[in-house]
Length: 144
Image (cartoon, rainbow, N blue to C red; front, side, top):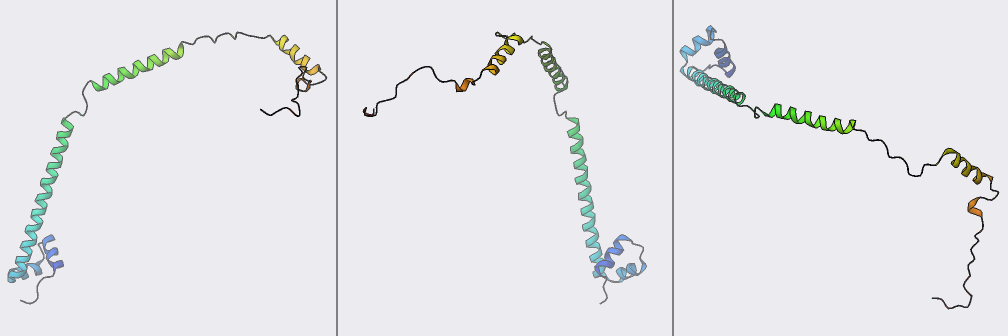
């Protein structure tokens, strides 16, 4: 027989085995029947492999869930440690110490008097001439 089934027709037959035309052709043509059988076996093996892999994955997930990820006392111990640190931090914050008194507290009146004296000067303090005398070096003195 020269008129064999195409790949598409073989796939359609594997999807829907009720196709009368394809079924009658496969009964008459051993080459097409063999090709359909090879493809059917391959798909069957693939389906079986996927089911095995899926079952292995599910079994692995069940095993992972069965084993605890942390020690059972880890959560309570971490809660206790957190509360302890919170208590220490809060107690240090609440123990407010009074600010030390400034050793040289100057009254407002004293500060106002000092400001008034500075404002009342006729010559600013930076411009008052120096009272200390100093000598200029002689012009013919040897340089050191």
